[in-house]
Length: 287
Image (cartoon, rainbow, N blue to C red):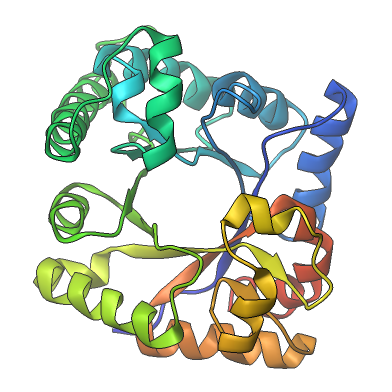
């Protein structure tokens, strides 16, 4: 199969003012990014509200949740919120779902919900995906005031890293984001994609693979160590793919190789580096 064309996303979660947030969205759109992705944590902007504001400030920029932890929401609430955002964005929503990152357990108590064991959370995500897709399909057939008939449901993105999540994502998702630790090496990344390829079988070519770049360049802010839980300098020394370094051409060549060898064509980057990656985006987006 011919490799997918590149697209790029900015992962952002905070802004000092509404004007700054909408300005960031417009900047991402003007620099050639395809999507603004917002995480779902108690320390960041509420994603649906933030993404709706971003959508009203832009024309073509897609918006996406990155990702909604299934334990945080009843499935019907996900559908309700997603249908509204998809409508208000003019069909520009990518709906990202996951089983919940490990540190989300400390937050779920504020939602008055139970986090559950890893196996329970995978089952909860599976149930949520089925319900979301069923209700989205019903809405697309005109059975919802929030969803005009004949509009396809938003693409579903699932964050996955382990075997059970790969099985679920390969069966249900349109986009899979590889939720790997930042210390993962190039060989480790290749091994995970090979595992996913085996699990997905003939469906592998139908999946869009996303990978998140935590930092760009070698001049990285000190607080990135706290966010990542590992020294970025160590990642640079080890050549970890979570930190992208080199000239514009060298960075582009690295991403091309990963796309051609592994199928990773959808690149997300930490919002603080959107300008640093912009020359690469200009070179590769849509190719």
